[in-house]
Picture 1 (cartoon, rainbow, N blue to C red):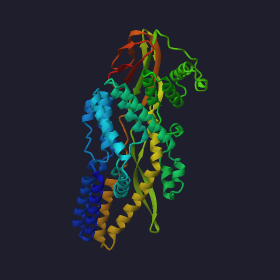
Picture 2: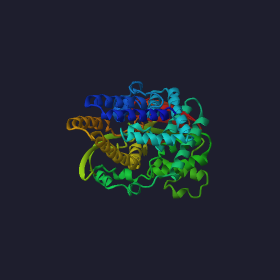
Picture 3: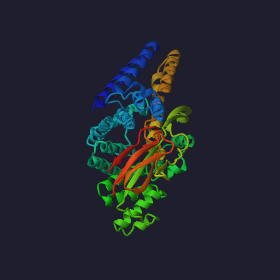
Picture 4: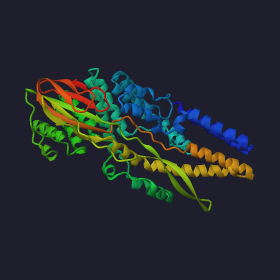
Length: 486
């Protein structure tokens, strides 16, 4: 991969920079900023280092919320392969193409990311290059490190890829994608990280000082068991398994979705219906609902509704005291944070033949994003402390054996650089929905009009076939409903 030799180029630039430390202040100033520019150009897009990711996405997210999906995609510069945020931006592009109805292009973006993830899983040298990036990040910020796609985002990659395949009548390919999503979640369950408290246990007193000021995640987020399971993907896979006649698998995934959303009456009813039909003796342990079979004159309507846009990580600045060389000094550090409360789940009201019903909550991606940040905190805090120490030692090295006037120049220069480079890593997949909901309804066979209250598209035509699944995907961003007769 290209970033391995790029790292050594950066090390060469740093060596050249140290050679200039003995020069006069003005020469030193020019050399210093030249080194910064070279560092940015040779390692990543300059904006990735000095402009936070949430700021880069702000215009695109605004247009996304306005239903202008193609414009949102055009406003996001994806950069080039090898940039530290390239594959994250491919995820963003894939989601925006999906909303715009360009499912072939969406599939291409997601395939690019999937191939990279598979490549990384086979490359031992990736761990070496990651270590080099971590070292270099001590002189800049965490945006220097290549973005690591967390499990819940990998799951959603396969979720949307499965839907992309459905548009080309690829049910078998869609089933492969949901199976891969299930495998990723299962593996993550087996490799679940230790608790935040355990990871922080051996850290220094500076961490305690910083954690006193760092906002704690709300109790709802803390209550989540993990940051990677979501009921939306389980509900989609259950629908696809039903369409393929694999009711045992559908029953299992409905149970998994119900475990994550235990009060969802639609999931309760489906677990009861399939449990009874499959003669599962234990199904009553999982649901209080009474089983209602699907007759030969009925089809099954499944509506999956996405709401709004997931909350973005933002930058917050904190003052960190550091005891060094027999004195206390304070440093300003930038850390990612999830501000505000999670968005409220608003049921989507539906109607068929005058009969009204509404969706119920499946998953809140705001919670998953906040939980992921909580799990990322130990590494973030450790690198931040080391970065402060590194920059302080760098300042002292610059001032070593300097006259007073030269020391003033050097201090001013280092201060400017520290302020400019102190940016929090706010990267995450920011075009995902905030929430997802479900409605399941047994309806008479035939043509119907499904009505949506409050959506830009007020209705869509659906066809129910005997004991078959009609899957409808909706959202409140303005994208047309997607209808699949499975």
